[in-house]
Amino acid sequence: MLSRAILKIYVISLIFVSSIGFYLNFKWTKQFHPKSKLINSSKIINPHNFSFILNPANSLCQNQKGTDILLICLVEVTPCGFFERQQIRETWANKSLFKNIRTVFLVGLSNNVSINQLLAEESQTYEDIVQEDFIDSYENLTLKTIMGLKWLTEYCSNAKFALKTDDDVVVNMPVLERYIEKLECDKVYMGYTEVRPRVNRKKESKFYISEKEYEKKFYDSYQFGVGYFLSKDLYSKFYNESLYTKYLKFEDVYVGMLAKKLNVKPKKKNRFYSFNRKKSEKMTQCLKEKNDQIFLAYVYKDSFRKIWNCFFS
Ligand SMILES: *[C@@H]1O[C@H](CO)[C@@H](O)[C@H](O)[C@H]1NC(C)=O
Ligand SMILES: *[C@@H]1O[C@H](CO)[C@@H](O)[C@H](O)[C@H]1NC(C)=O
Ligand SMILES: *[C@@H]1O[C@H](CO)[C@@H](O)[C@H](O)[C@H]1NC(C)=O
Ligand SMILES: *[C@@H]1O[C@H](CO)[C@@H](O)[C@H](O)[C@H]1NC(C)=O
Ligand SMILES: *[C@@H]1O[C@H](CO)[C@@H](O)[C@H](O)[C@H]1NC(C)=O
Ligand SMILES: *[C@@H]1O[C@H](CO)[C@@H](O)[C@H](O)[C@H]1NC(C)=O
Image 1 (cartoon, rainbow, N blue to C red):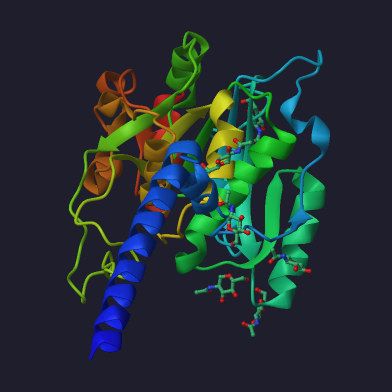
Image 2 (cartoon, rainbow, N blue to C red):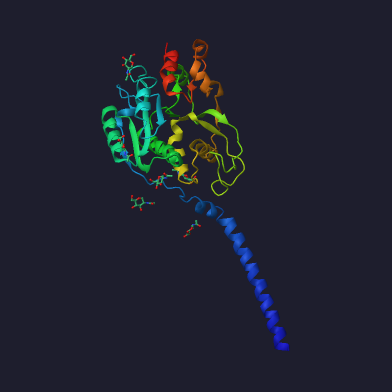
């Protein structure tokens, strides 16, 4: 009987002592290694382990006098977008009209070998295609943007600003050039701002995202993918942060998540945008509009040049 009681007391005190020990140890760790958890949480969770297949000459981001350029435009386009790329080269990305501005096209790999072959030839002619070895698809659009950030970091870090845009967007380059020339600041993440939109959970929607892909109810504020700008101090920061940020297939939302983590506030420039397809059809009031509109998006193939002619007259 007695020995049992002693054993009981012994066990209870053992538990008590070890809890105190555990508690003190916990406090000790917290006090003297407050960052230990933090250090381990910054593990690479989204490696970007792809290699460039096509890459323009290193001199692309230098102008003739060897000085830095003002703006590099990154246009996301599918490998098959031969027509769209040519149309852009001949309009708003015309190098002889805008000497301080360069444009490259971002593509992934096509499943079709002959398309990749044609791309390689196109790249030899124009020296303006950036391609990595991931499969080009809608779900992989964010990979394309991350490739763009990596390319900026490694090959174009001296361009003062970068613009990300798409192949169905007409850029009002004369107005944009004048605007950007006057812009003198760091930490620029500028565009048409979507303020903390609600995540779409409707399964039948094109924009559906499951809770597994993205937990929270709202996205961080982000700049619409049609056209957004980054200043050069941010290229490598955004690229690095992407390695520590879970993949999401909406590239513009994803860049907003990077900005939030880096404490970069989205700068609002909504006045410059128009997404109206009907307007792109008419565009007759072009004289009024050409001074306050930088992007015209979702443009039909056959109105692209008409709108450009209107901007550039
Ligand atoms: C981080 O975790 C690893 C094991 O994954 C461990 O070896 C290392 O000591 C931890 N670092 C810190 C600072 O806690
Ligand atoms: C990256 O890819 C290479 C081969 O392409 C492979 O050897 C390497 O282990 C990969 N690294 C990571 C971190 O996945
Ligand atoms: C660029 O514009 C110049 C001047 O208008 C024109 O001569 C040239 O053909 C254009 N370049 C392209 C690739 O269309
Ligand atoms: C691959 O692309 C070529 C050139 O556009 C086309 O003629 C051919 O039909 C395509 N092949 C497949 C399997 O889609
Ligand atoms: C995205 O690219 C990766 C790497 O090439 C590929 O394995 C994957 O199938 C692609 N995803 C889609 C949906 O095409
Ligand atoms: C890259 O990002 C991680 C995660 O935010 C951060 O811990 C690290 O300091 C960054 N490295 C550089 C070189 O900015």
